[in-house]
Length: 166
Image (cartoon, rainbow, N blue to C red; front, side):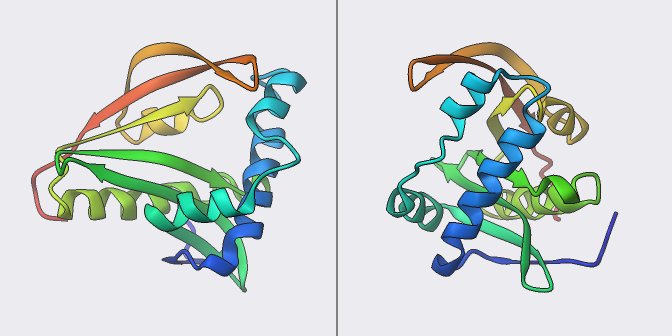
């Protein structure tokens, strides 16, 4: 695992960089699993930065950063104090397999546990399924969802959280 980055809270000034990282990650890392039409529906060129700002600011959002460059981010929240939900977890394609996503996930899990969550779940792309499995998640079902009238397949995954202190 790499230690040449730090984790910090999301700042509103990060929004455009986070959006660009999201789009690049999906188009680069998802290309093996999804068609060009599916990728364009999932991460279109035109997005609403205000909607992203709202989404990222109302959840717990953490940023992995090195030398003022954002390497990845995670956005999550606790539902009814018993279950956590990982909404977004994306890394810059140049920084995958360097511990960025794993470190972000571990910090999110620690926060969720401190808030009383006993499980965590997420809707996971085909390209991210192996990572989530390595973190201890299991697939509950394979789902088909529609984004901009295009079908996408994803995994509904869940993990039981440990009650031991983090």
